[in-house]
Image 1 (cartoon, rainbow, N blue to C red):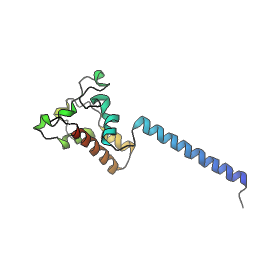
Image 2 (spheres, helix red, strand yellow):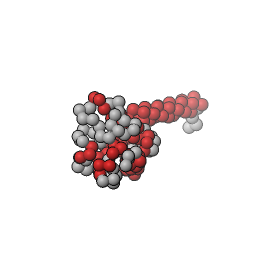
Image 3 (cartoon, rainbow, N blue to C red):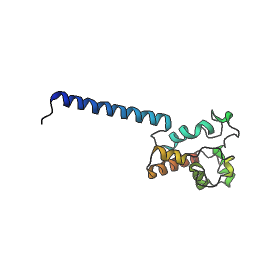
Image 4 (cartoon, rainbow, N blue to C red):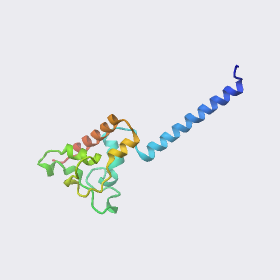
Length: 142
């Protein structure tokens, strides 16, 4: 049986509506839960800067509302004999290690599970975390 023109047009309209809805839902999800960019700076500004500040010194707009002031992330190497504690920072961001003394309290959100919920690709999550840690290393004051 050959479909008539009305059936084909109705089908195409349905596909267009579903495609538009998917684009809107995807945009809403990325704007409220996360960002698509893997740039370390972009990720830091979206996830870390509200507490740690855009400069990483601990004075973000949310800092005053916290029980403990966020760590000044620019001095991690200074407090570690000039060596950036990459593994510890990465463990702190992902929530997979023991609490990092330099961080202060363990009240900081751990981003590993959040990143995994946004993007089930373990490789992409690892890249995002590595780039955030790279950015934190790049803002060290030695």
